[in-house]
Structure formats: structure tokens, C-alpha cells
Length: 116
Image 1 (tube, rainbow, N blue to C red):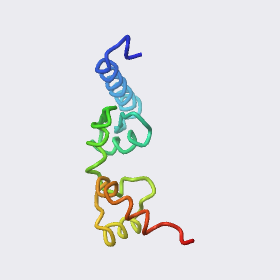
Image 2: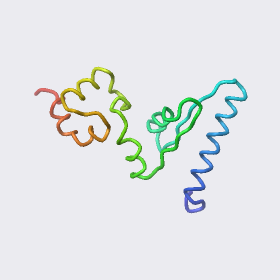
Image 3: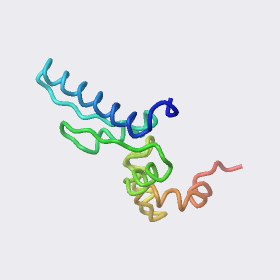
Image 4: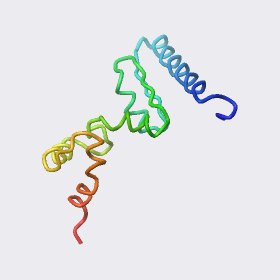
């Protein structure tokens, strides 16, 4: 599809559509909502938390844009990392951000691998 339309046009159209959906929700229910737009559901879900309340956030599709978005995030934003695991990763490994988690992935794998 990007052969027919420039990627920036598609992104602008998606942002406009998202804005109109949020406006329709507000007009119909009187309630505000936040939304995230990204290349997959998980990133979009995390992005929807970025401009609360009543905002929207766009994560670009390139690897550089995605890494720029996820790297500074708290490890708590990672699906499956709750309070206890967050405390363990921070205390034992000194991991605070997604980038830290990526950089120390071998250490984390070693510490949490199943015993044979």
C-alpha cells in the first residue's frame, strides 16, 4: 500500500481516524479516552498510557522509533513484570528500564533459568 501512498500520509490518516474515534466517544458518552497507535497491539497499549487523560500517542514503525519509545520505559511496563519481579530485577540486577533489561538479558536468563 505504501507504493500508492507515502507512509507519512498513511500515518497522518491513522492519527486523524484515531482522533475522530476519540471525539465520537466523547460526544456520545461524555467520557474522555486515551489511545495509542503503533505497529502492534502491545506497543499501542503501552502508548495509550503516555498522554493520559484524553490524549493519544503515536509510535512510529521504524526500529529506531520503536527502540526510542521502549528503551526508556520502566521495566514495569513490560507485560508479565509485576511488583515482585520488578523489585527482584532492580535489587539483584540493577535493572530499571527496558534498555537495561535488554543489555542484561544474558544475566537475567542465567539467574532465572530452570535448574536441570
